Image 1 (cartoon, rainbow, N blue to C red):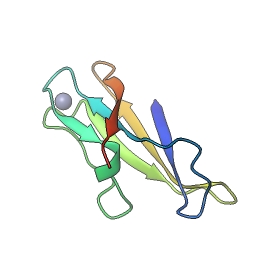
Image 2: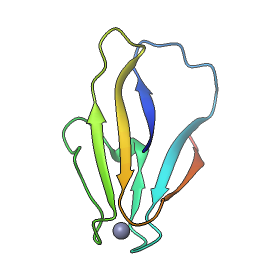
Image 3: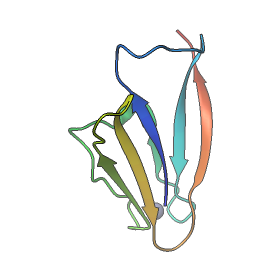
Image 4: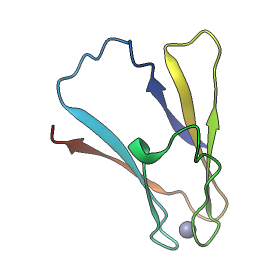
Length: 85
Ligand SMILES: [Zn+2]
């Protein structure tokens, strides 16, 4: 299982450039973007059902929620992309 967290809006942002994490299923090439995952569309999965995206809401954390990625066939590729603002 892999994952990453989303900070609450009032948390300090130490880096000037925003990044997002890209999760790509190597089986069906479905791509998920971390900035498109939120509490309303969690529990998504890719076309071939290799990847399942989920959300965990932690208590007393700087993170508003964590995105979890689980896979059944092969590990997806994780990489970061810079967002221009
Ligand atoms: Zn897939």
